[in-house]
Image (cartoon, rainbow, N blue to C red):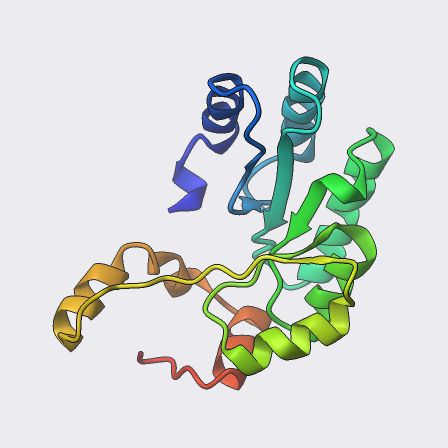
Length: 175
């Protein structure tokens, strides 16, 4: 889903349409969006609306996600996109450490209360921990599954560390 959306143009419109609200990307998939595009968007928005764009990063869908994200962050660093203006998708301990060391914090999704507590321990008290909770207000199991299918469709592409982290949290591959 994320790969097909024009994330950066939508973000630019959202920031420019408001006067004070900070706007964050849920997650810019680094495997699909070039660092140079993020840098250009960040630079323009910082010039016109300083401090309003929070760069959410993740989605390194390859065999070496940590190396990919570190390389991407190196490009952002070199262009002046400060670590305190970034937040990272993070499920596993290595991604949490990366979020702690190279961003303002972490943005986990589909996590348990015990995960949140452990993540806070890894991040420390001086980092952001923005937990995304998806709520479907019904007790009908089938209705819930249908309602969740589209926003969770990206999980069908999940692989490697992301799948392992979700299984460790208690999810099965058939849920």
